[in-house]
Length: 410
Image (cartoon, rainbow, N blue to C red; front, side, top):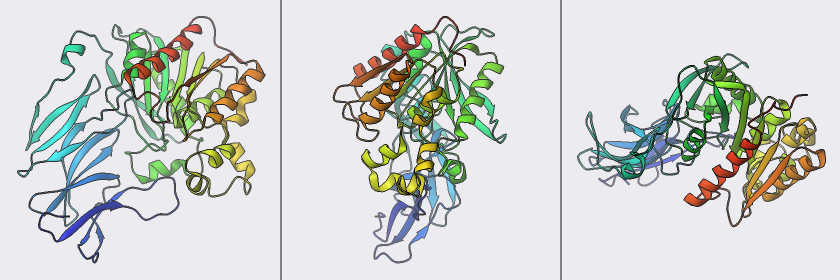
């Protein structure tokens, strides 16, 4: 409710049974009348509405091209970005995120970080920005971290520009090609950006470059970009990811003979899809994947959602459609040594998905191993620092097995 008691601000969207919709800021009178959208022209999802003290505008956060910002929205629908550089506190991977609050004078306190530092409390007042805490200075000032660079990618599918960032080993020297890990975000409706990541820095410290990509379907690029994978996931997002790998090679960072791939949840789906489509990677680690969409939509924690919004049919109405998008349909092609990781209490991508992929790989004689994290949920597989470090360590150990020698070929 606005401070003057006249209006209510809320976020929502009209349900069109698509996988993604922009969340829009609305205001209405306190009796529910005169509801109207204020951010329809922004083409970004907004969240966490906070009223200005004078009740004349609302502050929101939104993701834009992999970065999280704060905007002030006027009651006339005007949009003014007032703060940038936000970062979230879940930093095993470089997801967008963060939080903020607004003072009576319009000063903004936010969680602000960078690609090489976790978030601290930052105060933004007018054009001035002041960092108030340095919570990790004692730990990180004595460590040499990998540099994170943005790289330009053009998708082979349709020449569409794709955002990607590469984290380089701390001792990287220009012109030296190093092993590359393609690390794929989940969701699939989510986004990576230039944010601190313990996984990426641990991989980089072990001598790998790490590639973080926002393929089609990623958020923070508008509704149309996210819905390019509507009823088509996995699909041309594969081409976006391979184009990013090709760009890392063409720009002189990556050794084309030492490529690795991993990802969790939606990234686990794409990891399993990738090794079914190509043998260019020496090793893979698919984390909490979906392997068979028919079994997934009937055993996951949202059975009323996934079939309806991601397929438009139930499995018995379109069995071939579900099978054609299932990584299990490609398992007969897989030659890449593949680690399978899942939490024992994962109800979003159930344990049975990971187990059936592991079993199929075993039956085919593909080198594989199954890591089941005791007591871990889907979102909590790396919730404790010890779990996060162990997860990254297990993946690194798997990749190290296949660091030398030629990758499998047809």
